[in-house]
Image (tube, rainbow, N blue to C red; front, side, top):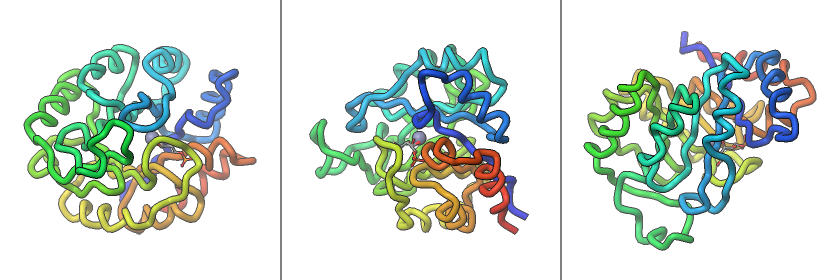
Amino acid sequence: MGKDIQVSASVLCADFTKLGEEVKKCEVAGVDMLHVDVMDGYFVPNITIGKIIVEALHPITALPIEVHLMIENPWRYIDDFIDAGADIVSLHTECYGPRRASCKEFDQYPKEVDTIDIEKARRDVLKIKGRGKKAHMVLNPGTPVCFGDLLNDLDGILIMSVNPGFAKQKFMPGVLPKIQELCKTFKGEIAIDGGVNGSTALLAVEAGANILATASYFFGAENQKEAVGHLKSLQKN
Ligand code: DX5
Ligand code: ZN
């Protein structure tokens, strides 16, 4: 039996005029954690939300909060997000290595790397864990698994199944072999994010993912409880 499936609801598609009610809906629907998509307009071509939303969410819910940091120089903000209430900090691998020629300019996307400075990444991972929180590393679709022995220090790995920047994009099945490869050696959480819905989730779970992040599928569902129930029923045998 595989690990229990956990559903992580990305508030990017929530109605921000009533965020408190949206969080209650997540709880009632059986969501396992909240996913906060932080974008800076540099690492990705979009600007979204930051620490003040985490501060607003933290006191109104017992659900763990994951911050998905799609920002340059994420190390500058680790303490801020943990102080604000983050339980899981997800760092992009592409912030720790030389960018490919295709994305060296600030406005060239998606950001991708082939190798990283493992010790630099480890410092940030250990900083997060030193504060009693969980550290995940995120891989853009075009970035290969390149963690070396950093794998031993990670609580989880988040596989992007779209190029980050926007909700409502189409799932990229080409990332599934990375999950299959990781499963062979990595015992931590494997999350997937981007274009997850009732059918693509099955592919991700079959490949070995156990955390499903979703914005538009969950918040757009007529019956959110059923949507979550469906995702959790995909449990791998
Ligand atoms: C994309 C974000 C995702 C996004 C998912 O850059 O990291 O978390 O909100 O949106 P959906 O589920 O609509 O693809
Ligand atoms: Zn995300």
